Image (cartoon, rainbow, N blue to C red):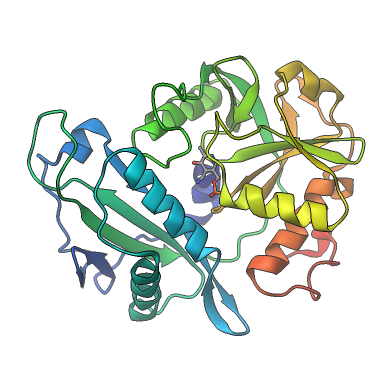
Length: 315
Ligand code: PMP
């Protein structure tokens, strides 16, 4: 996953002896937070989560698109019949408290809703627990491009599982595909959908560019990323046409460039897909301009950063 790509460079410290997490209605020490080994979420992957980022801005710590993330968490819970007893406003409030209590501003936030009661049958739970942790996630910039390979694994069939929900069990598919790609010497996998069209990465959405326009897979077989939606809005505001349509891996041989999007890594340029190396230098692609615009937007530096060339960003 893209997150893996970052972890190998940043190695975050998830918690220390002083870290507080939120679990079941209260803030508690990360070292003391517990979960039963008989919890069905652990056995069956029946749980939902979010990956959210907070940024230090001139107006203090700001959680980017917090409403969208918590609306998606609520949708994910509904989609897998997992109860959730928190409103978007309550979740937002808990998250800002969590950041404050841990003295975090540039952070990655991980809410997880799981079934805590010991139960070894395949029944939807009647109660759920909310766990929320946050850890330092610095301003990580890289001009390093990623090398993708078309995965032999497809994204899960949307007629088998609610693919637009962020469900823990879906990530078995992500881990398997990502590991397989790395075993073959690539950085990351690019997965197709059940019909053979390009879908997304194991933990990120995929865009390619051709002749001044952007193309990305439509809703239906992908997780509709919040970063993806932001990038589409940014591109259109810059006058770049964006098409959400199905395309085959062969189409990519004619592309000028490509990039992945996700909350953790923001926008990551793609160097190559299998043997096909993109001809246009990444710095000259729409993806590079959007990466700079996205970085400025999330850090509320719009105007100051938007025009700054990618090459000048700190490594
Ligand atoms: N697709 C998958 C499979 C993901 O896990 C993620 C990361 N949440 C994304 C796309 C990107 O989503 P977002 O931009 O909301 O982080």
